[in-house]
Length: 283
Length: 283
Image 1 (spheres, rainbow over the protein chains, first blue to last red):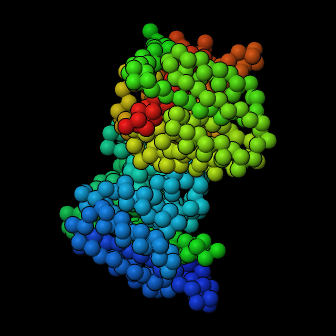
Image 2: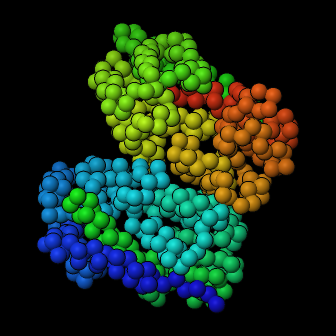
């Protein structure tokens, strides 16, 4: 029987913990607040924002949303971030990425207060991930993948773990986190040769390719544990992962569904960071 | 015929480039200077310092050495670093690591001016490595391994490359650098299972285990390309790499000797950084 690693159970666990912390703060009349900066009207961003706001309301976290036209320049955006940095009522800041190409992303990432950087875009927080210090803010998506593997009791020590993604947001930080759990980590990408053999021999595969249903069951074995971070829309306009779920799910050891897998957990990680940031500020 | 990837040829190339830059500066009466901070009298540190000073003299780089008793406290060490940060005649700062355990290494690493951090210990420089920005200062040892592979024209794109080391100083930054060159990277360590099979199937193996002659020829194939970063003393008090060189060298495709391989290149990378730092300061 395949273990279907649904995100919901993980979300429930994390949200319970967050709610507990929020309630303790509430009794002291203290309210964590997330500042959100969104440029433009991208439908993906809007739906992510909506989901964040809804989750914040459920958990008792306040939100403060700043929407600007994408024609804003780097200097104006820096000013907005600096204002949120100084605002003691704001414990976390989220800036929707990627930014328009005329904005100097490097400057933006260096501007955010590292203590409010709940999405881990400041270099100092990224460096901590490389150093194996996972007590700070780590990028939410790879952290969500980790939380799922841990929640479903997947043993990582000494296991061969293949990551299909080498970005600074997903693949690289995930590799760093998994090394802390003693996995043997292989990072694959578009130039990798013999990808099928590499995947088939792995104990655990985490994929974030963004190509709907790219991997069919031929890539896997009955012992494969699969975490699918990819989300894209297939030819029938259905939200799909990198793995052809229908083809695969009943022949592997464990798999995350899409939707309802990693993506679902990501927002909870973000909100946990907002509350943890508040508690640190409050000390 | 095995390609013996000696460090000397790589050193000559790097030093020629460094010497050229130093000579141009000299004509303008400008002299790059490396500040070295060494605590205690560890024989390994002393011999490394001696080699650095000798190489600096050869290349026309000045040195300013600060030696202190290891009983120095964090605050006093911070003061010394801040003085070097402010000193406009100093373009690079090297602090011998590891520091005595009573010193807060985190504070020290955050104190050094990132622009003078020629050994890449400041988190901002480490973050650049994670981000794939290799134009700043990268850690010298993994960079030396890269330079050797590039000098000897080893194709990295799509190749399976196994690193045996997961430290922040060697294994992790090396993995980040190799991903930029499109290699498929596997990071192994003490908890890795089936290490022999993983190594045997790899195109390129970089090892930094620190266990003299640990890998004999059974680990490799006639196609193996081997870079040995390990340096330790074997039972006959001979300086040896992780790979049993005498057993292995004539049956693989390429190998670095120890001594005379990666270690020899490391100092040149450091001195290149000192001169590059000066040129940036001078702009």
